[in-house]
Image (cartoon, rainbow, N blue to C red; front, side, top):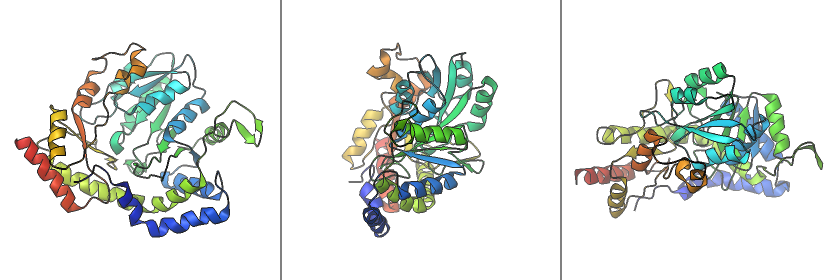
Length: 365
């Protein structure tokens, strides 16, 4: 059996570094918003090439707090891609604003900038660019759209730690970026966690207040905030893992290249645009009989997952708002066909060869 993902392998590989980091937290006696969080915020900000990083409890909170810091709320609209995980939409809903879904580009599977442009209204306050599967969105085109309409461009970089566009890492390509450190991510913690990165000092300070009950000073709430704090244990883990991120991303690129070379003529898959450097959080392919294809791979001992079905607008939570099938046809068609193959830094060549052989066998059958 080759699992879709083996999280234990990534922990085991660097356990000799993780153990003293965890002991350091215990010895220090601080467990929430202490020196490990402060150090990680500085290190990750530097990694992303921005002035500020604010650690929060999850990627969902990171996106929600960015929107709140920008003043987005009831009566506003925020444009979001059709093809994304539901937290992208839910973070908008959590502010009281309305997520406006738009379709995607069939070549890249990322949001279609022309569709975004067409969806802007006088109620639009922000555009969320999701770097889907670790592949950067069309940032230059989206920046032009956002600038022309006077709205904020926000990156949802939950799957794209270390990805870049024209040599600039994601996290500093919009007004702010939301990162997730869920354990499955390229830079994952041993629990939940997230961060906001930005060059806007005022926005960063607002997020810092919001994450702590709206307080800059203990017990004095200046605004209505939330409890969304990155803890010391996760920050210590992330500091260790950040030192391995580039090496792990390079291995992901190598594995993705091997998949593309072996399967690119047989299966549809997203094609990164020129000038981007993906980090391959997921390796998705499309097959017209996805479920049967997945069952056949399972019979051969190959673990797979589906990302994402149903899409956010076709979940019960958003159908009540009037969304129906064929509202966003390109995304819906790919969602019905997509399947993610095993890809993580510790996956061995021989294991990937077995996956490729199984896929080829299923396709021939």
